[in-house]
Length: 262
View (cartoon, rainbow, N blue to C red):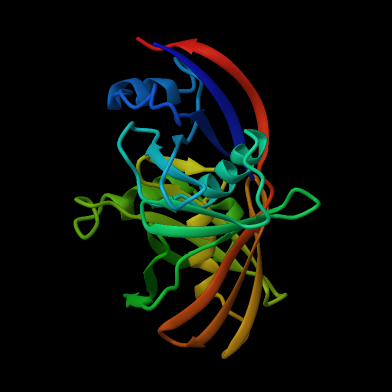
């Protein structure tokens, strides 16, 4: 099979994308996807996405982790596939697409920033002194200091593979809240990649919800990741209700090419 692929990145979170509206790539196997995502033996990416046709939507996002297995929602991936759709000629003022966690809306502004609406969050639970919540993917939030000096792979691996989370897996985020209360630093160990990534959209979203600065009402939290800056806007109604959540940031095409898939 010959795969015509496109490489996109959103704050360093990089993805292989393919236009699958004719279903020609639907037969890709777990092993093939995994090999394509390998950085020394394939194209190299944190994941692979297929853009499919879907009745009632502008498109469907089918996301696979770097291990080749179908994944849960990916925030930066969602923003990248919206930009990909635009480059394919799907031009909308507001996009509506289907992902693994349901329907999403998205917009592209005049500066090329992609804003993706995430689903409402209704539960943030305490786990020891840390937090667990689901923003389309499950996330563990650990508030820390000196995040940039931390061994994120070692500490993230330990939590992700602890007895509580080993079976289903969890993404582990180390978050430093800066003196400016609306700014945070986030570093993430991602399940499925099984390593630290340069950025994680659903992880940044989860971290921003935990690090709100306005007890009730509108919040905007800026997040610095290894790959760049993102912002999360949301309404905090109370301890258990977060609505109108938007993940905002850049998404760029890196290159395109053709590869023989065996």
